[in-house]
Amino acid sequence: MQSRRLLPGLLALALLLPVAAISAPATPAAPKPAAAKVRGAELPAWEQLNPEQRELLIAPLRERWNSSPQERVRMYEHAQRWKTLPPEERERARRGMRRFEDMSPAQREQARAIFHYTRDLPAEQRQAFRERWSKMTPEQRQQWLREHPAPAKKD
Image 1: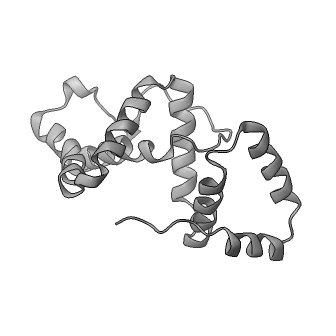
Image 2 (image 1 turned 60 degrees about the horizontal axis):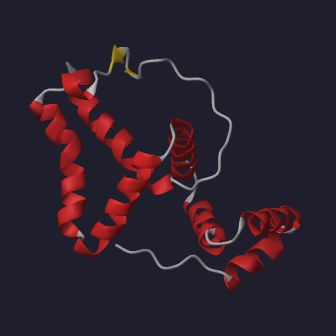
């Protein structure tokens, strides 16, 4: 019975987190089983969820939407972009988000700074930056981060 109570929360988490990582870099991942499982129980398709489970999944998004009117355009644009992504790109985004979640706060700030700096660069300039970054010493990287801080977070 406890797994039935955990199921909706885990589904909500799985559905809401990928949007933030749409442009994260790819990393190799182990193959996954065909059906997602939680503690040995298969997770049903959306159509098989009961109204209470669906509400539990939708409620966090509704709360974010209602509490942040200034973010609605960004949220909507992310949803539109997500819908157009091919399955491989969606999986790449999910892996990037999982990697980001596993980082320490300092690593996250570093990743945010690098992402902010490189997000609008053409592909060849991003690659050149990655090559320069890999050759930097830890002190040079810290200096770069001081000169190019991550933008302030919006709450």
